[in-house]
Amino acid sequence: MDQQQAEPVVSVIVPTRNRARSLRLLLESFERLVAPPVRYEIVIADNGSDDETPKILAQWRAARPDRHVVRVMKPGKSRAVNAAIAQSKGQLLAFLDDDVVAEPRWLAEVWDYFTRHDCFAAQGSVVWPDEAMNDPALYALLDRYRTIVHIDLDPDTVRTKLTGANMTIRRHAFAVVGLFNEKIGPGAAGLSEDNELADRIRAHGGWIGYMKSARVVHEIEPSRLTEEYFEEYHRRQGRSRYAYKHNKVLTSILPNMLKACFNYAVYSLVGDIRKKYRAKGRFYHYSEMLVLARKQRAHRPANARA
Image 1 (cartoon, helix red, strand yellow):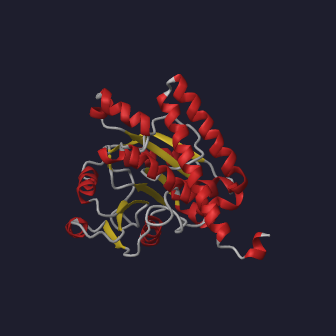
Image 2 (tube, rainbow, N blue to C red; image 1 turned 30 degrees about the vertical axis):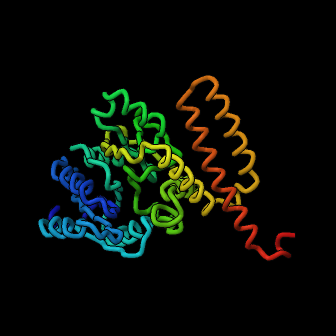
Image 3 (cartoon, rainbow, N blue to C red; image 1 turned 60 degrees about the horizontal axis):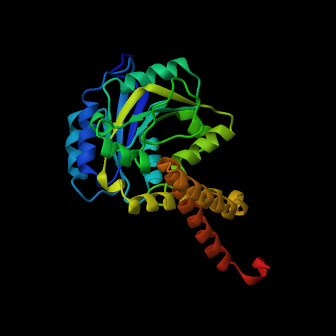
């Protein structure tokens, strides 16, 4: 059986919702990909977009048979991704967010890495555009808030977490640990659906690699570089962490929040902006968890609280 008739070995999966302009740029970058030596397919999971996304995807899908679209109307990134996994055929599943652009060798480097390593999953590099790195004012905002993903580490770093902007997972890993948790992630409780999956992979003895050469470039959205977005971003992290881990962290919420306050004061005094904002983010994170813990306790029967 030749490669054209064989099932795809690699499936590229992209969840999207109402980001027509960004998605178009990503799809255009797929046209420039250096193909791996095996067949691959692309599956876009449209999570109920009501902008131009459905029209863009209809035209894109019609052009080639190895392009697929899954439309999931109920909100939830994890739900949409799980639907795409169910439709995909590859044994290697490469995930991208819809606000990145793949460099030409991205997929070839993903394939090369997994032929040389026995990891369950691997994180790829996520970098900022050159114009952002060369603009001191913009770079200062990016470095302060860290609300736009940037991952550029030493080669073959062993990771403990995953970031959905650019990660690849073997299909058998899902058979072992289960799919994405649909109670968390965008459209559900905050964020962290990728990190929660990473926790399960490591709990089952799998390891997570790092594909330095498999690079994507992240879009710079100015609305993410504000105090308001920074606060909401970290509160969403707190909500997602509480949703899947609250039984393990209830006793640590208040101490961690107080530690964050102390660190914020110290780093404010010494003028370390980056560490100051890291502490500030953790304060928002844990204070949101504390709010949720109090609400849960208030709704418990009186005899259960005794």
